[in-house]
Image (cartoon, rainbow, N blue to C red):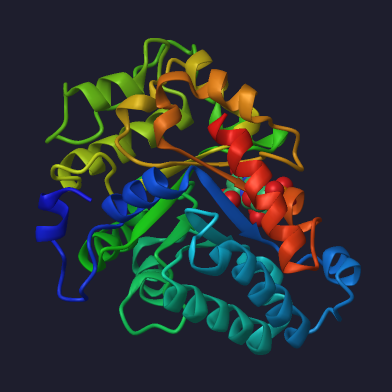
Length: 321
Ligand SMILES: O=C(O)c1cc(=O)[nH]c(=O)n1[C@@H]1O[C@H](COP(=O)(O)O)[C@@H](O)[C@H]1O
């Protein structure tokens, strides 16, 4: 962590999320384990699809990721939807996982994909990013499709509490393009990301040469936010979700992801077919900011901690190869 980042430790005793994540990715590597307690996986692990089953599943995955004190992942990403299925008891299992991960010193990204009008967004920000909330993670995934600026309460809360956000930009699913590519090549120019960054490299690079796709506008807005918030850190608090399966699409849309100054959470590695080699060539110059995340591809190696740890090591060396 840079000396400046350490100096900016807030009242919560936490350095900025980008600095914490960059330091962890440097020491551990670019792997995130998604904790997705699907009914089928629970069954394969010999667990019931109940809140107790979810908790056992989550804590086993955490134990493997913690590597007996030498973590095998830079972060854990629990999939909130799969806990929500069990109502308050399921959410209590998620709270337990978040608390135990905090105790083990492992970063957490709550994959909640929240997005709403600004005044309601403040509620989501308080739930996932405020000090003292039982659901507070180190970062949360957000959906910007009500307008990037509707995310403002979460952007501000994250910066205030040393936490982070990952904003969906180019998602790994094939349907994502029907919305995220709109505006590409239509001849219209994307707006400047913010008055403060108008004409700056991040805004221009993210806007790209070929016009303003929805994805390019989201990337530009994130870059502008990081330009204001990152200080001297390599990574600011606003990360983006860019599917590992679509890593090369950014370039096709004229987007320079290396100018974002935020981490790039890349789902799709493993079960959705993306490979480390494909990601390295697809992300190109932006590769050092990529946090590859895999859920089923690793979780299928359970239920033993040893089996999971072996799969984590294999994935890590694949990504570092
Ligand atoms: O935000 C995400 O993590 C996400 C975005 C995206 O574009 N695609 C995507 O698959 N995800 C999530 O990443 C995880 C992928 O799981 P696996 O395909 O099992 O590795 C799931 O929890 C998805 O909800």
